[in-house]
Length: 547
Image (cartoon, rainbow, N blue to C red):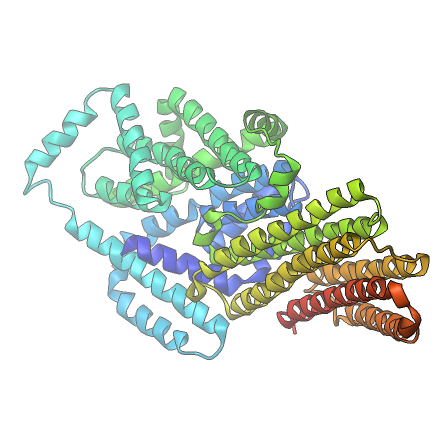
């Protein structure tokens, strides 16, 4: 219940925040200090360092952040995630928040019935908050009392009586527990429960918290195992950061615990002995990450070089085209962020199809050169396969997203993307269709006249202009007021095609043996105009989400 409540609260917060957090992240990372503060702020709000890390990786893939900037944000996310520990230590043990769980749920339920998406998201967040503390109360009440079960104490004592070896043992235990629960915040909460019930002493609890910092990076690396090299580098940078911190914390373990005790005492948090240890755990968690960040922020370039050297990226051109670059399975757990990366992947899809237009132009220009034409024809067939493959991957990814965990705006955006990738796949079909028309023309040993060739090349230029308008509209969809540029490009295409058709029909009866050449010419002309239809449909679909 604790884990479900935390996930529900995080999901509601992410949806309520919407694009605001993504815009903040993209604009406030110009230097490492700003990056740290941004990561800290966003993670404090959405209560999920994993979501922040996924968002960061997406922006790195999109070129909005460099790996250098991303490492700073991840450092800040590590500090931000300690806010959960403070919430639990302050409210979860000192006050019986579980008594307020039902009123909170009632409030959340009422808000969830609202017609306004933002209110529903806030309602989901409140219900998650209530479940989180209800789950914590059940955990506390379910832990056996040491007075009634002294054998438990003797068992734990067997783990705790080996000096520094016990510290390492509990560090490993914290690491494994985080891997099992898939939540560092849940591990810290369980550590606090065990500490408050007297199962373990403070040094062992501190070791578990250090282990949690390792465990959360392993989880990220597992998620990034099937992702892009840049995602793997970001996850590895997270690991390097936390491993370094755990190493110095272990070397200075006793002085570090002494520092925590001094800070807690200086802040007047030692008045209640039962709460002091809980505050100390939260303080240790926060201080550990703050010190680690203050030290390593000066070595971000070094960390960047290390992870880039350990994880190389040398894909072939074919691999680049066939594989998605901006989205991966790890993003599905945070659908609100996944939609943004699906948009980036869709824009890349459009750029690939624009490259395909270059091969169409080359095929038309070299239709009479058998060797060159055959190379271009195979490339057009290849681009048709690429368009089919990318469409299937993006559609599958979008269909696997949990729509209930997304804001209304993102759900509408998803529908637009599904329509857009379908139109882009049709652009690949058109390129392959033009290659077949040209092949049939060559099989009949027909050749385009100089005028026909010039008209077709002019038509490809107009299609290229339409592509430029389409890509601009997709990239700037949140800022442009209309798609007049795309409409003008489509009208120019239609007008030129209609003029050439009328011109050709007026002379076609006198062509004689050149009739088939005219048919091929008109067929290519029509297919290029059809590409313009697909392109304007894409601009219109992309504009729907901001209308």
